[in-house]
Amino acid sequence: MLTSNQIIRTLNIHRKEIQRFGVKRIGLFGSFQTSKQHQKSDIDIIVEFSKGKKTFDNYMDLKFFLEKSFGRPVDLVIKEAVKQDLKPAILKSVRYATG
Image 1 (cartoon, rainbow, N blue to C red):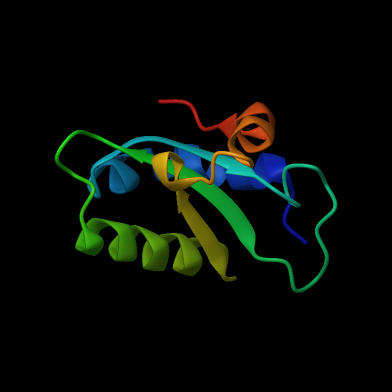
Image 2: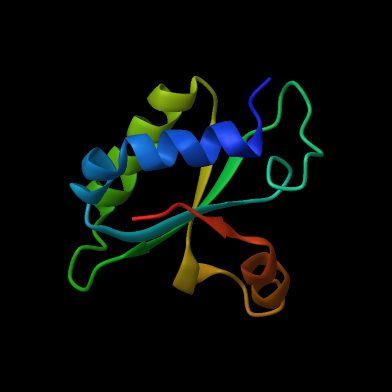
């Protein structure tokens, strides 16, 4: 099963491809970040797009790229769309990829 380190490493390795989708910053949160994942867990990824790059096409293309890279479903969350009551806990737990 994938670990948080493997996920972050994969995000870093594919940094250039990920940036093609207008990504400013990308990170991991949720069950894989806290090592509470199970066999059917999806991967929770939070993303910030560069100004003017937050489009439906960029979002969907990034989601498909990540799912292909990891071989499992990805729950792709746009940072500014996180519900206010959940935002502090999620942002506190995020581990961002470098670059």
